[in-house]
Amino acid sequence: MTNGNVAAEREKVFIFDTTLRDGEQSPGASMNMQEKFRLAQQLVKLQVDVIEAGFPVASVGDFDCVKNIADNITGVQVAALARANQKDIDTAWEALKKGDNPRIHTFLATSDIHLQHKLRMSREQMLELAVASVRHAAKYTANVEFSAEDASRSDLDFVCRVFEAVIAAGATTVNFPDTTGYALPDEFGAKIAYLMENTANIHKAVVSVHCHNDLGLAVANSLAAIKAGARQVEATINGLGERAGNTAMEEVVMALRTRADQINVRTDIVTEYIHASSRMVSSITGIMVQPNKAIVGANAFAHESGIHQDGMLKERTTYEIMNPCDIGLTSGNLVLGKHSGRHALKERVKTLGYDNLTDEELNRVFHRFKGLADVKKEMFDEDLEAILLDEIVRIPETYQLLSLGAMSGNKTMPTSAVKLLVEGKEVQDAGLGVGPIDSAFRTIAKLTGTTSKLLYFAVSSITGGTDAQGEVMVRVEDEGKIVIGQGADPDIITASAKAYLNALNRLVYLKKERISKG
Image (cartoon, rainbow, N blue to C red; front, side):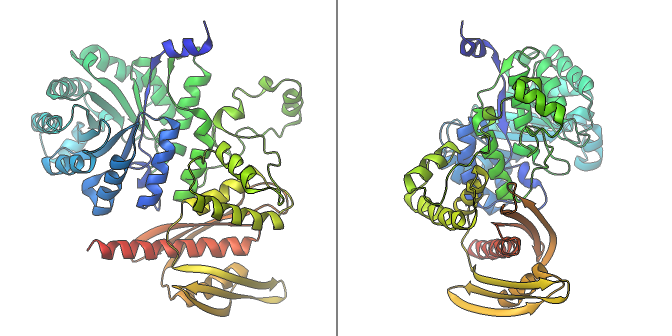
């Protein structure tokens, strides 16, 4: 029997990806329609089972994003979140109705803490509302999920009653969230086992879990739940999410793959797309992955210790329990040079997971690639990824950088001269600052007339070497709106200017979008 047949015989765990909904609730991580759609396309490549595209009733923008994904993405279930009321459910269905087997995901808290202090209702009132809401959703679709918010701090017997009632009303998935990240793995696994044993009709629904990472236990709790019988995990790429984040999808998937000897289940995730997906989420949201993060961190497959290096040279498995290729991570070897042609670039781009570029997109990437290859002595996959993410996941540019010159030193007043294209018109100026980046930002602010506030600035190196591209992330606030800006360039001052302009362009885009929708 082949390994593939063995894997196929294992019971499946469904992956419900909520990067576009719960992940977007990270401060400053909001995405526009184009960015959400591009990420949804990537999730299809990963072969997630469900994409939770958003919360349609929250705003016109969220409704449009969910509808755009449901209308145009095939081969995956698209879900929308709805509170337990008819308006939310009706709005969710209106956004979802053209999708493939669309899922309405409705929720209501079950813990006494929430019932008493937030909802101001009794357990019986909650139960009645939950059943009515699920029954209403089931009129639209047979694919209904019910979540018991704050379930891990709820009375388990009451949750069993609620689950039994909503399953009878039409719920095909019941979700047991650790909303506050409060549970411990043994405890959480025991709770799932209790539900499985004490909910009479539990066999008629898929048991799901949605864990938050406040104590750093979201992945551990999810794995404990799977061992106890849960067969859906709700997760986000890179563990993105509000507060300390959610269950990291890539960690759960690779844990199940690597330790199939202990947890005899499978997922359908195409793991070779994990690395590219992680980079895409970082680029879109501006939230960098910490270097020591499991699976997708820059150091996840790095070996500094001499003893480790010696072992690796003799046999990779002495210190590596996973092959970097399994997540789509290349060895970092030189990939292309300035003499490489368009065809070679296109083929390399495909190996990185970008196999559906239009001719126009490929031309933009090729132009940027050739320009960078003239500057850098060595080009790596990471450099190419930075170009791809900048050129493909892009927004309309009200402000474009034409040229930047900066002067600085320990005995020189930091000065920057900037030339921009502002709505098709060239403007230029020069200004002073505390340092060269500060002087560039001040000059850009003067030329654009922005009154926004810079909240955060971070810089990192995409690859090693003195000619490595610098990657800059900024967080900017204006009139209560917080946006992320990113830029990459071998010159760190230029990368900073690009990041700042990217943020300002996002602010303009949001304002225009708000005006157009009244």
